[in-house]
Image (cartoon, rainbow, N blue to C red; front, side, top):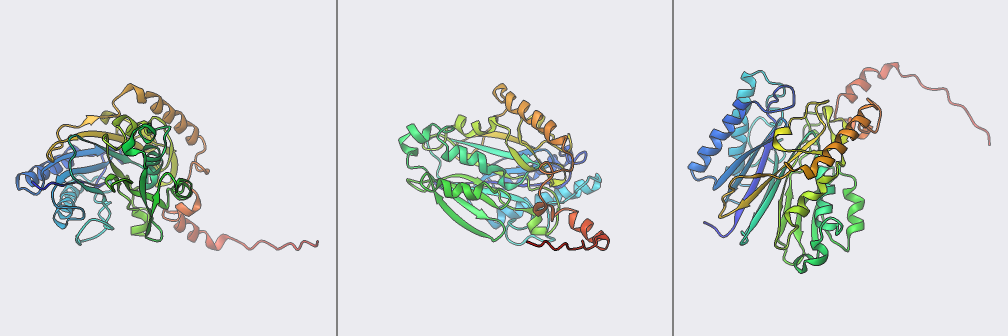
Length: 373
């Protein structure tokens, strides 16, 4: 085995059961069968099939690096096979994340979300994989900032010498397709000016300053920017390496003790609280929400993932869940009014443009009134 492994999460929504709340067992069985065969054939070292809401995540270890055509083709073919099952079951949104008609090297820009990183295993290699539903890629900006730049969340930034130099954040501009590296803590204020607008600026990677070791990776695709219209929310994934010069496991999950606001929810057109939930509570049903996040903790050993821990199956997150429910009640009372509904700049990828075009002829010019000063 190589001295470095690759951890990949490739996810897609290829059919909801019922509506947008969950994934049918027959689709999951299709993914499980294909993953088991890929491991037997030597493509993968190990795998785990994750799920949250109507999204399926293929969590895989291998030795082929990021953007490998074979790994990405396997994921694409798996989602296509699941789509065929979804079509037979007449499921809503069958294949909705497969925006291309043919695979073209890797899944970037084709619909499925992808987070990957390559690293040499440490003597102990705990990794947490976060999977979300009913939200956008920028939903990770706030917790990543708190994990890797906020000393009130991560005590290691203050008391751990191996973290004291801080972390570098690679931020992507999803509108203009550019990226920038912010060095923290000295460029923190500049970075916040950008990542505080999560609909456009998204943290893709986090690196440790002293040696450039990768610490975090996220999926950053925006489906509406790819398709030019609303085809479903992005439902991003994220992986975090913990301990030994990285945030501890407890520091990495602590940001989710607050149900902060994200964009997404019903029809991808509303703000709402993201709720940390255990795996048996991962089905967003109320108004197709509220948005959900689950956390799978792995102790990787020689590329083997092993059994995951359900990191949010913990009563210490009960207050976050209650906070999310209270916030959901508050926002739902505002119905179609902003700020529960997204601003017009985000609504341009929904049915709003068609409605504006339909009513265009009914608008009349308002008589101008001259004001003399």
